[in-house]
Every structure is written in structure tokens, then in C-alpha cells.
Image (cartoon, rainbow, N blue to C red):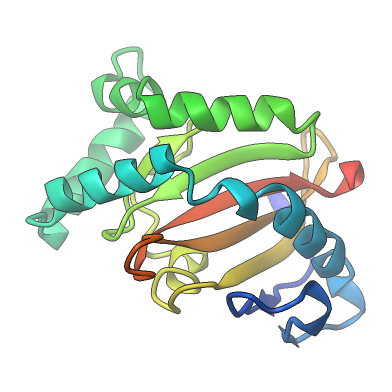
Length: 200
């Protein structure tokens, strides 16, 4: 979401099973008016499918495959991704964008009627394992979208600042949710959804 004007940053923590109206909202001020509509949209339209078997199984599979990765390995993979973003040969990007999870996310974005601008699924190492749109980097572990959800535990929703895209003039916010294993209720990853605030 580079090149956009920062308006505010806010945090919403959602306990599993709580009602929408009892959600604790931290740091709500005049510039955070997007939090309520974004939260309502996500609870109604995104949370119902974040534990879809395709999402859960993809996270469990990649968590197992990536368990051995060191910080150096992750840095190297992220560097490869960043290089491929501006290149013509993109084996790593093509592998992620062509997998069943990314196709599932693309379908969810298309079905939103313009309300969703992007979707990423991020594993336990902070790596983006499924995307509806190509992101600028592969490792998301240094960003709040992962730190304020996966590391915070099950049932967490983080609504980030509202930003205006300078090229499209679209006002957007990212909402991120912890994805948990439905059987163990343990966090296995994060899903981040870009929301077009003008469509809410």
C-alpha cells in the first residue's frame, strides 16, 4: 500500500464468540471512523470463510514445509520475490499465484463487487502463501498485519489505518484476522483483506 497518505492507525481485538457491538476498540478518534464499517463488513463477509478447509489445509501444509526455514532463508526468499516483482521471469511468484489457495482468494475478491481490493494468507513464519493480487514482498512477518493477529492469538481482528491511493484516489484499509485450526483452536496463520472504504 505504498504511496498513500496515512490517516490513522487503530486496533480492534475480537474475542471469539463476542457480539459485534461488544468489541473493544482501542484508540478510536475522529480519524478512525472507518473501523466500525470495516469491522462490520469483515465479520459478516470474511470471517465466515477464513476457516474454509482449503485455507486451513494450505496453512497447515506450508507451516510444516516452512518449519525448518531460518531468518536467512526467509530473507533470501523475500529478496527473490522482490526481484521477481519487477522482472519477467517469476517462478516463485507464479508458484504462489497459481496455487489453489490464491485461486480461491481471487474468487472471493471477485465476488465482493469491488469491496475487497486484495487478500493475502500468511503462514506461521510470516510468509505470504496465497494472494489475490501480487504483493510487493513475500515476507510479512515484520508488519503489524501479522504481528497483531497471529502473535496475538485466536480470534483477533486488527484494523489498520485508512489510506488513500494516490493513483486511484481510493480510500482503503487493511483488516487482518488470526486463522486458527478448527480442531485445536490454535493460531496457524493470518488473513489480510484490503477493504475499499468507498464501497461500504
